[in-house]
Structures are given as C-alpha cells and as structure tokens.
Image (tube, rainbow, N blue to C red; front, side, top):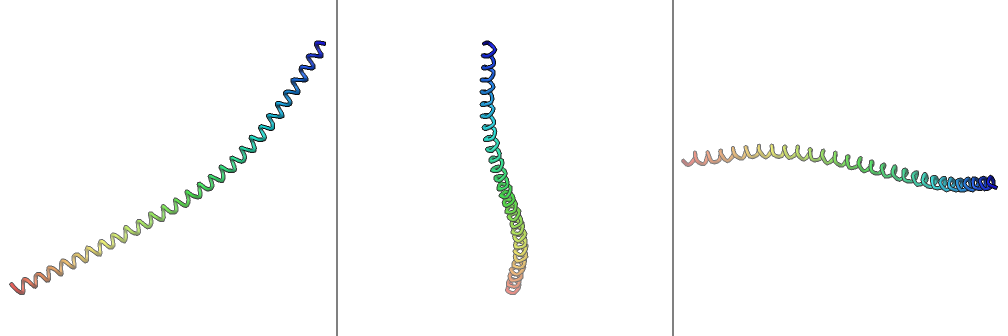
Length: 104
C-alpha cells in the first residue's frame, strides 16, 4: 500500500507540474506577444522621432543660412550707408566751404 500511495503522490505531482508548465507556457506566449507589440511600437516611435529630428535639423540649417544671408546684407547696407555718409559729409563740407569762401 505504501508503494501505491507513493506512486499516486508522484502521479499527482506530475499532473500538477504539467498544469504549472502549461500555465507558464501560456504566460510566456502572452509575454512574447506583448513584447513583440512593444518592440513594434518602439520601432515606429523611434522612426517618427528620427524623422522629426531630421526636419528640425533641416529647419535649423535653413535658419542659420538665412541668418548668414541677413548678416551679409546688413554688412552691405552698413557699407553703403557709410559711403553715403562720406559723400554727404563731403557735400556739406563743400557747401560750407563755398558759402564761407563766397561770403567771407
């Protein structure tokens, strides 16, 4: 009888173990499905992030180029203004010189 109980116990344990193994395999399958879904979502998010970084980089480079263009235009305008100031100073000096020379 002792052997029968031992065998019965062993069979019960094997059955319980088989049930636990089946539950674990189900849990593992669900886990792997969730992991695959998360990896897919992560990849999609990363691709969108990378795309946005490329757009931002392009915008920044364009903005920097425009700033350089504006700075160059500003320098040209300042140079023209300086030349105009010199011409105006010479004109004023000439007019004052004539006016002073002609009257005095």
